[in-house]
Picture (tube, rainbow, N blue to C red):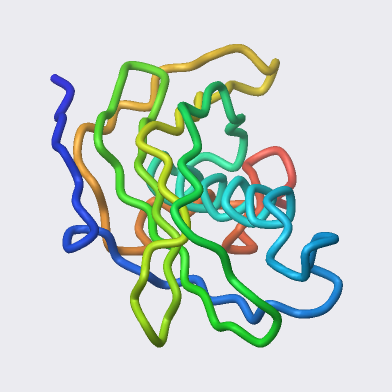
Length: 152
């Protein structure tokens, strides 16, 4: 059974923070959208790994990206994600980026879909229906636990 919710900024936990540095700027002196999207995709992958308990996940889809405002050099920004739907082999989430000081929204993405993969790289059922806030789903290779074939 899949669970689906509509996440607002109040329901998103903001954990990842970035400092906008000179190498993150575009020709206009504001945060380059490509840098921001790279950060979001990486953060979303980490979120999917934790939620699905598998280090083998891939980005399948991103909906319209809404750049609401910009950030400048020296700004501190925070990225937040929340799961909105668990499919059989997928996880859908919502993303928001905002200025830490002003809390002004910089970007929203209503739908980012990640797919859970098996060892051969094929979509695989994950068995989850709810968000976790614990570390109990971390894949064993991220915990330093050897797979049965690697043990002495």
